[in-house]
Length: 119
Length: 216
Image (cartoon, rainbow over the protein chains, first blue to last red):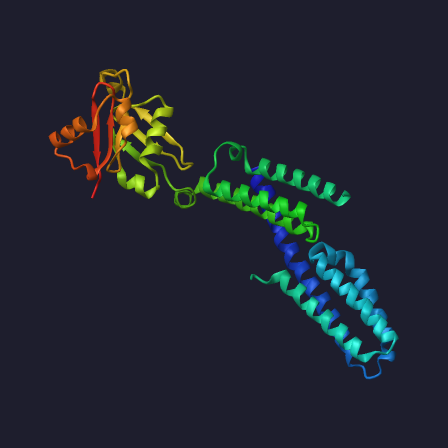
């Protein structure tokens, strides 16, 4: 019976932590997608440096947590694209900003899907 | 390299813990669910070690979930006979009073050779010696020898071999028993048995035989 109790506790722990972490990660990925989308829509991208810094800081503050649950390949792609986007913002290259933004949104969408999708 | 060492160590501790929780029976005899759990756990372990790109938590959570399902299943099996039957199947009588139950044999996809091998492993060579043979849920065949037959059967120097199996003569076995095809056909004629309908014919060195006809 002791083993059953251990398993019940582990099962409940896995299910609840899985549920909450999924929710939290999805929220983080959504915020990232929305934020980069906003930056890409700003007409004068040189004015978006502050926004870009906020996105970068937020991403790096959550990176370790994301690494626990999301494929490292996705994280690496996100990181590269965020850095590329930052550089594009600095050099006021709006096309490159848009391109990076789309790539980030796509990767975030894939990561989001891999958390809950059954397929 | 440190990552691999850490991952392997974590997985070793986790799998040992999981198998310990699942119970020692996993090491000896496999029920279908035990086999599935063990297979999945071994695969997940290798994924965790070989694919550092994937978070180790994926494998850890999966292994722990499998462990939980295994324990829940075994608990349910213990408490409910219907679930036990669904999860593990039930023991089936394969030979009753020396007669092979061909329906059970077909259902379990056993061959006559499997039956004969199981008999020989228990030092039983004559079908008549078997009072009952039961296929356990683990797939093991348990044999209860007929206490009367064991003393009544006059055993030959050469034990019985299958001289006809599935309607075909096994010439090697036939020569071991010192018999030839001509004599064999005479016996079949005497017994009014069509060779194509013979599932199994066992014959020993003294010419004692046992014919099992195919069930239509």
